[in-house]
Amino acid sequence: MIGATGQTGRVAVRALAEDGWEVRAASLGGGRDAHWPEDVRAVRLDREDDAALAAVVGDGCDVVVDMVAFGRAHAHQLTGLAGRIGSAVVLSSGAVYEDDRGRGFDTQGEPDGGPRYPVPIPETQRTVAPGEATYGTRKVLLERVLLAAGDALPVTLLRAGAIHGPYCRTPRELYFVKRLLDGRRRRVLAYGGRSRFHPVHVTNLAELIRLAAARPGSRVLNAGDPQAPAVAEIGAAIDRVLDRETETVLADGAPEDGVGDTPWSLEHPVVYDMAAAERELGYRPVTGYAESLPGTVAWLTDRLRGRDWAEAFPTMALHYGRDSLFDYATEDAWLARYDREAASRPGGRSQ
Image 1 (cartoon, rainbow, N blue to C red):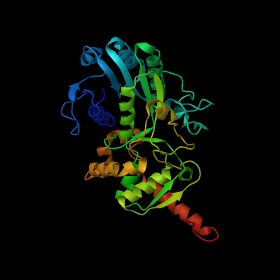
Image 2 (tube, rainbow, N blue to C red):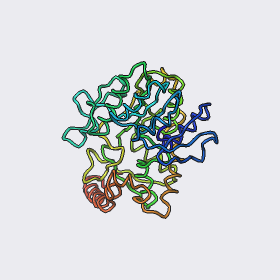
Image 3 (cartoon, rainbow, N blue to C red):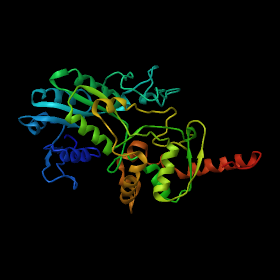
Image 4 (cartoon, rainbow, N blue to C red):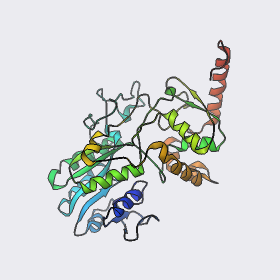
């Protein structure tokens, strides 16, 4: 397992070990998770060091699970060990898809750049061109090189949705949890709160890894939860976990000055078809989104206790911007204007 102490890796190591595999858990720090069985062997690995990876593989192994592979170089690392690896399971991403007009995750900032995918998206949907420029293009390049290995190295590529659960470095649920902990009782959601960005819980992703490891083959499969809830449903579910009541203001159209923007906010739905995983692997989800939330929320609240959110989640702050997610002053000004406009309409303020 490469990337064993990451958010998904630590859960997948445990799932494989409990399924009877002898697991070498490789990570940059060589650490262990407290929930791993004692016979899991933790090893240090600098992924960029070809010789170090070859040494970890040693005389050979039945399967390599790679949680951190990107681009051509990492793909060639794996294919170069094909004679010593029985098969591989490699994490890819739903960010590889583009719609029939060439729009994808990379074009969202452009005018009319929001992709309009089929609902749900099958694995046969076209992808962005391979390359090293962006997250999505690097994942496509990784996929192409690995699939070209054919029978020499059977590879299952898992195109994951929005991964969620404890130990996430960029937890989307933080958007709602922090607001509730800060005493916010109103929130604004763009696109009428209808945005859907298909999530996948770490235990469901680990289950797909476990099944694929036991059934080697060359394939590409989507990885998602049984539900793809709308962002308004996610906010309401987190309210219930924390036992809070919140008024949600549903704004039509795109965010205005960032107000109403969330880590799930997309103009058009992104929902992945899970039929192939069910058919080829016998996949059945371990949990649903709402059912998994108490564990995620408990981990978030514990990590935030006594700490600034950007200190607790520096990668989140870097990715979304230190001031953009929780700009309450701009949000309050927008709500004040909304209230004035609503009060001036016949019938007064709408709820």
